[in-house]
Length: 483
Image (cartoon, rainbow, N blue to C red; front, side, top):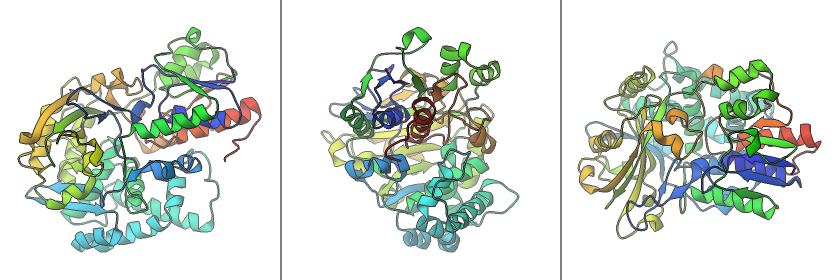
């Protein structure tokens, strides 16, 4: 055996495909009974014919990821693009809407329209430079960078600075404009304002105004994992499910091992082959705040108070900037917010094939303290009802998963952390440890390829791609033939 990959999430499958297309013999070991990790779609038994995305549901990286583009994945998936990438309802029936059309978005933001257009227009025009900057290995200059790339980087940095801390005032002054961007920053699940969260917001908002925006995949997120699996099998690789790894004896002999897992498992399995300081760093890897998941079945469209919210593929339920900031700070202090930032998607509004007998799945999660054992169902329903009066009456069935239990279906979600580790500006450049090569573990031939390594969270496959390319060079003396 040339290589063993532990974990069949998007990064693990990306690593396996990269190694297999270089002609290596590869096997992937997956603890769960199905492949996909954070991109699985399962029938939870809530209603006949209704399946739910158990982790991720909306996928801007399905078309923007350089690795996925190298596989032409965006051309093979059926990406369903909403008219609006995301929306931020406000109390009183108001809402701010981020349409894929930048000018339409700016027109709807009134006094903040010019600032929104000035910030995101130039970035959207150079979105590939933005992706290369934000989703690189955080250690080197992006490949193919040009003088124009440097200008884009400066624009990106200015946007992050203006929206990531309180010293320099944001260019967005209205409640609608400020709330719209703050809701996106909340994806980082960290106290706000934060430079790291602002970086997340600027990247995702840029992609919201380009090409496919924030699409859902027809049939559910599982389609991404299935496409990667098909590529791997075509290249001669294979996946063994129901195969957890907890010690060295669980692994077949191989020249290289790549872990799409948290760093702690690497230290547990290969600690005797790692330098002691790296064992300590991996074993003590810091996780962040959490999400608690709610899967709902409803019997009709969500009755949003603002009629255009239904146009958005993703809805951020948190209210104004101040309300979102207060909620995220409460979570950061280990408290449950009374009105937590809640993310929601109604995929059947685009993918009508996911409606069964008039019933449809609704995907949602709320931000909570790490390790919370509180069932989030009532909190989430109440938060949706706040902006969609009558929503409660449409709910036919529900399934809540406290943050403390998310790891039961994906061991990487430690304490409910869906980001692979605490999100901070320093952390994004030093995770999992402050080394020049963040993928090498110090054990010969052993690499970390999960979201705990650069570029961090997201369904992009890039952590797996970067780690596998290093393994190809360092262990096998080969280059990725598709790079």
